[in-house]
Length: 389
Image (tube, rainbow, N blue to C red):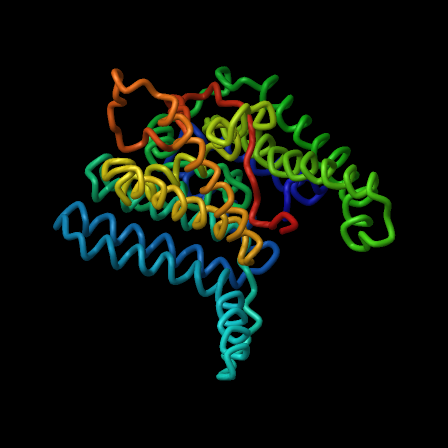
């Protein structure tokens, strides 16, 4: 079940009515919204409901254990389990095929079994959310949530399959008090939903079927001008597609009384790669910054280490978008571009005014999320349905 369908419209009408009627009674509302979210996720394939449930139980158990013992080994075990699930479902085929081809080229054929592993929708989003939760508990930034609250946070259907990547510290406090229907910015929510539908159906899908796919499928049958138009059309398509789902997710959450963080902010107006990553998929950008780049050392250990950390972070960001070498190369190019921009900025810096080194200085200064409130935010995010490499 996806947002721009009749099935989802009927589902949401029932859920919104039930949600507002039960909201004053949290002991009834939470099981209701949890059941609705699991129904939403299992609508396409009920087998994946067990995966979402397993992720919730595993990470909540880890968070409770970390709050009690503060043992780093618990955190490492939880992260390994999270990445193991993500790796199996999303990257096993890519890894097995890559190793098979590499061994074949050097004359050592040892084919790994190429299993057909179905990709659970949204696994990248809820896995990253779970990891940020246990890491924040280990750091002492947040306390473990009630098990029911964490389950609602993980499964909440507006952001479950298409983002944004919402952190526990942004969402769970909003569960503390009942939402007030009089405070819901319905006009903004409807504007986001309708705008998302227009971007998805009238722009992204139309560009894909009429311009991009025909040219990309058979480029030799088209002129240079048609190929150029298709390339620029694809840039518009992926932005409209990604941002449409997030606009709808943010608007739907607003109608239920919950605020999500911003995720897109006119990225194609950026004047540099660093600024681009302040504007494109903002919740992913700050996740990579706070849970990959900074733990690697940020820019605390000299220029070479900083450039290496940028490369590693962006390559992993590329892999997050899709299991293909094209995404690895795409991430590496962005990492190299960020490193080159930083080097250029350092070369232009006056010797008399040395920079103060901070862990995130080399990383795009992603705006801090707004304090959770009912008034909501602007913008959009990607989905687990991958763009063309």
